[in-house]
Image 1 (cartoon, rainbow, N blue to C red):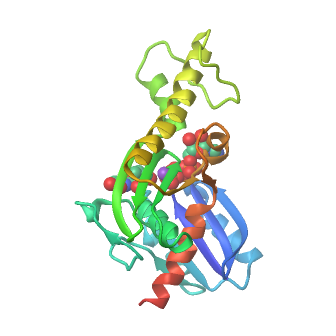
Image 2 (cartoon, rainbow, N blue to C red):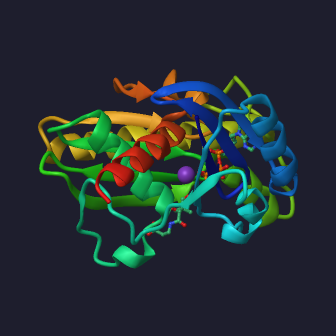
Length: 244
Ligand SMILES: Nc1ncnc2c1ncn2[C@@H]1O[C@H](COP(=O)(O)OP(=O)(O)OP(=O)(O)O)[C@@H](O)[C@H]1O
Ligand SMILES: CC(C)(CO)[C@@H](O)C(=O)NCCC(=O)O
Ligand SMILES: [K+]
């Protein structure tokens, strides 16, 4: 079994795989890292590999305690990936974006792909049908928008996602919900229609912590998969051991 760990900007997500079958997903904070890995290993005692990718401030050292019981792979930007990186600053490209791109190439061969990750940031990544990673966009995520409206003003309250947002917000709260939620939805649909004017065909994958919330609000047809990064981490690892 393989334990994959995605250290995100806000929290950590982990999953146990048996080959390509996802057995269970976990989410926890950085302070609870060690305790949760122990719980997972206790539950899945046949785990032999630990595969980690981190955009957060958790590094290799944090996992050294498990070095004696697991083979640890810390995936980094200098590893082999199933695409050509055309970013003009390849060394600054986020490892999460690289893993998403790898997953898109491995799961959806021979086509253009747009990956949208709605997490702390909303990232857009485009990989063409010749497996060139071209780049994309980085924008603030839903929670980040609520928090910045509160943090950088005197009067705006700190709100969290609600399942109700009118176009015309008729109160302070409803105006904020409209601005944040409709803003993100129009932004994503707007990005997709701009890409459509440039590329005739491409598939769209939506992932990240806000996948379920956003998927039902978008006009466009997308593959919504909250676990796409975790699945891609597993596939990238398997690709790397085959191509090493
Ligand atoms: N328990 C939770 N903690 C934080 N965010 C959550 C939680 N549950 C849902 N979310 C939503 O998920 C979004 C954050 O996504 P995600 O958990 O993928 O972020 P992350 O851990 O920082 O990962 P990444 O850095 O890959 O974006 C927030 O905008 C929030 O609305
Ligand atoms: C954009 C984030 C924060 C999204 O998690 C991450 O991919 C990152 O830190 N990227 C580095 C900058 C870049 O991708 O160009
Ligand atoms: K993200």
